[in-house]
Image (tube, rainbow, N blue to C red):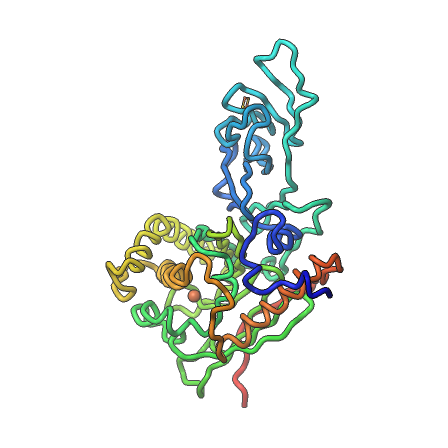
Length: 398
Ligand code: FES
Ligand SMILES: [Fe+2]
């Protein structure tokens, strides 16, 4: 590998077209919007990897992603109308089909539709999310995660848009839990979140396997401290955690949670979280309804509280009692990650033991892959095992 192209960790923060991270993440399918946030015939503007697009769902229910602007005079296409599976621009009524071909120019006496086409992008819908592929050439096979196929309830939580670089979330480590989430753990009697924990990591064929364990001898409250998690390269975590849905916080229900951390641009990311909860029948329906209604309602104002805390106008300990644990955890993570700075300026950190597992292995793997990409060398072909890669408890050592 040539020294000339070798990049450092700080070089991974920019995400636009042509940047190392921008090129690398464009090699993978990425979620861009929740399915429920893209109703039929209601186009939405989206931004990912510092580029803007238009997402819409045709009247047949099929989602599409096309250019942000009209090819005529650049109007924003999300202002337009969906007609069947086509999209009509609001400015002068040009109509584009789902392949991006212009098919109507109502104000032209001599239409030249055949010469006008807008870019379109491959789309898939999975686990309550709409994914797009924004790279060159044919997309890679679409990934599915067998753990999401197990019987249970799947909920895609309200997306978390945070005004900071995506690395602030991606290299978050398990050591933060008893500190960042202390207020909520105490308020909600979620005692297993209070103990100091350690994590060991190993590289796998799909990314990383993470094994967490308590730092000290276990006590009766340490359920969950011995557990496994997974990381699927390049930006998907799979955790195992006690349910944080309101009213369920102290019950012994464990979610498998998938998180996709997706850069919107250099200064903003969106986290898409999908949880699988092993409940079935009526219990599943009640759980899904409670979880969704609660979190949708609380999502409206959660960042107002987070910004007040960052501004010193209130403290994390003063979060209202009636907020669900999930929302409180989100606010705690927001103030921590946004508080690190929009772009944290990696390379100025003083790393210790707590950083030696997850963040360092993740950074090493990313640097290796991105350097290979820049050198024109083959990337690792990550393989999701056909059987569910489970997360869960590990029996305490004898
Ligand atoms: S800008 Fe879209 S039709 Fe004119
Ligand atoms: Fe957290």
